[in-house]
Image (cartoon, rainbow, N blue to C red; front, top):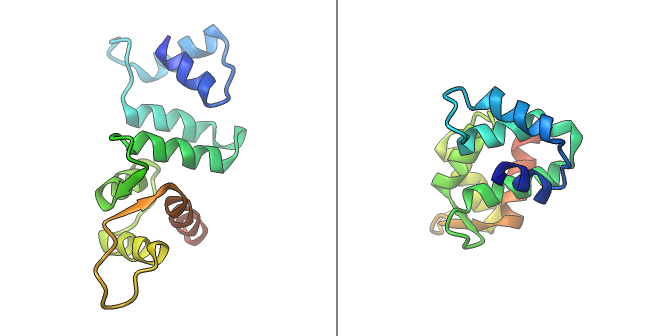
Length: 128
């Protein structure tokens, strides 16, 4: 039921049989649960069925586990690995600094907002 509610909250209207199939395809140990990684993979499969901004919002929410409205560099690394984007820690820090407006010689950005996250991810997928 939680999985179905999450899908509906994100604008999907899956039928019961679709939810059962998604769960059986992803819950190989028959535990009745799926991991965050599997949840994101389901949405990657549905990428063409929804707006990329919606998916970026979902990704931000999934990795903003403390519900602070901010992501750290480690969070951003996890997001890019999960969605299959190759980026080094240094590249991501540089993108964070650029999105945050950090000038050369200034201290690195520690965390970013959701809007800054969109800028980084749009830039990353445009260069991939």
